[in-house]
Image (tube, rainbow, N blue to C red; front, side, top):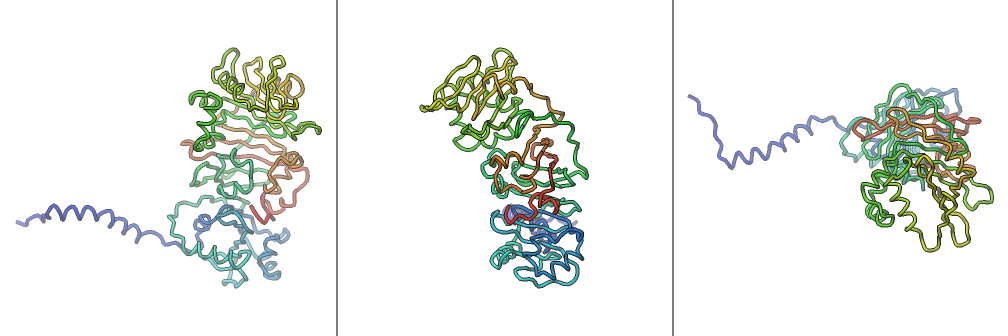
Length: 441
């Protein structure tokens, strides 16, 4: 009778320890190699990528004129098909690279290199050398494509936090749910997915989700409504030291803070008169109820005690105004008959003008699944120098913007959809995407 093979205990321990290493070796040997030209590798080196269709009926794009010799650019534009890419590197600075997928044999172009089926043309030799080295030396694990819309027939854009910070400037801290995103554009409509934390793998529907009817933001340059401020402020308050500092200054407990962060709200940005020291005033309405609302009462108590020495508080009826040393109104608040709290920065909450208008407009309920709803007038905001100058030209020139943000199950990402409207087509609209013709994010 054959005897079973028996190993000494020490040998068994070594064998068990080696099993994970052997398994990893097998997986490594069986994994697909990093094929040059894989778009996933390119996105790992990007802060912003814009996909546009090749359309010979339209004028030759400016980036093609800058990156390619004239006759070659014209030839490729006339013969090409499918999407081409504008590509900004991981540091979100410098001029974009041009990424094409021409048919035929490889092309020799100044500052360019062949990467699988793609021709990548950088702005200068140093940029080309850097990007080429990053792509050849990349050994990151490849998952699904973060933004499959880049390979589709419609214009698309993919961004990461570096590009968002460069474009949004001082607005960036309030755009936490949009740190990484993928959008597809079809005419005036756009839709996609965003996330506050990487990685994003967007699964976009073929058609934009319905927007539905939006209430008009009477007199407001921008109006944002939501079920709570948590999506915008959670990450900001998690910054080391900031959350505890605010709780200490305003006397809020953690439960009270969480109650306020999950309170329905409306945030409006309204233009101020020409003689006002502030171009606009910010109006925040938090839902309350008649009588006592403990979290709102705690907030008001903290605001009263937390004033700097150079400011003073003045009460006029139900309104409280914060005045500077010269008697100029800086901010204020007012409890409305509905129990809602109205907070103002750069204006007066008194029951006249915008204060009366805000009091008469009750908070509107949001549709099922909607977390945030936005309406804005980007062109009017830009004319008052209230928009970051690095935002895409087509967005800055839009007369109207409306958008919805819907958190997806699990909370890792959210679906966004919206539409832009223009009084006249912007220069970049001919390319079909918001950043067309830009030289930086």
